[in-house]
Length: 402
Ligand SMILES: [Zn+2]
Image 1 (cartoon, rainbow, N blue to C red):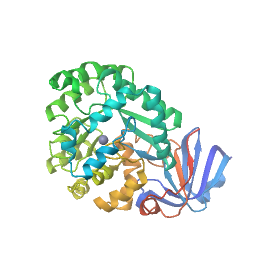
Image 2: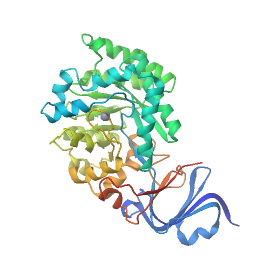
Image 3: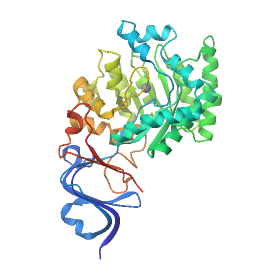
Image 4: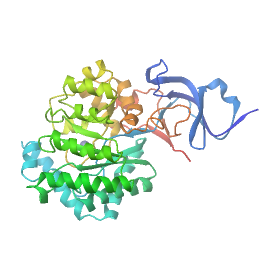
């Protein structure tokens, strides 16, 4: 007797992103069946006769991947930093701009003034652009509110924008992004606000899926970050960290100590921290666009990540200051050309490893039985095409669970 399914895709180059012994987990000329929003079968084309499907897609030999995942963005914000971009090109450093009251705080001022609905609308436009490139799961951080009401407003805008655009948004509380001006002489007071008021409220009301911080000379110290992580742990929220971007404060090792999901940026991460990341399966999230836009020269220690078996994710870091982009495919190209990743590492960086960086790899990031039926059919039979032609977009069809 034939099995019923909602959707059958056949004649596809299935890029499963699993460990099946083939590069990319390729199933050459394969097929898969979906039912009630989940993948229920995957195998060779020759076995599709076993199924009756409501909808059939003949991929005609083209590539099918899992929906791409952008695991690190700051998509909710108001205002523009075009002027700061010009300043930086005139020679001012990121630290000089921050110390002069620019940088993150200029976005904070604009974001505090914006309404929830204004923030939602501008975020939708950015999300829509990501979706058009096959990005079907996006992480969005708060961190431009820097007080109770505005951090909560940002998390609500992220949620609303995901619902309006129809893609899955994972929300991260990044209240420890910068010190708000009203606490400039009271660092401890702001950390207390985060730990005693914001994190408990966010956890109780399920407003965020994780907690993040900016552990850096111009952000928060190792000890302050530890306090934020302790509060997150008390409230059962996983942690991730902006770590070792401009200097080595031991941030990647710290987030690993807390069993964190990911250490992000990590240009200056030491071997000792990498060893800790390996022990805790903490993902190394590479942000090549920020590296490029800041004209950094210190590259992340890719070879050491490889040697120690660290999974690498790639994300846009989309933000108005240091990564003004919503082009994840371009970031794949940049990760290969700037950091020397292989095409396979790049693809895994926006699928299964990005899912690990968000703690959702039991549901997403690969084509496997039981996972969410969230896929992209591309107008190419060569997976390298997704990485190769910078700025190109070969999405042919987006498949979302119904
Ligand atoms: Zn970031």
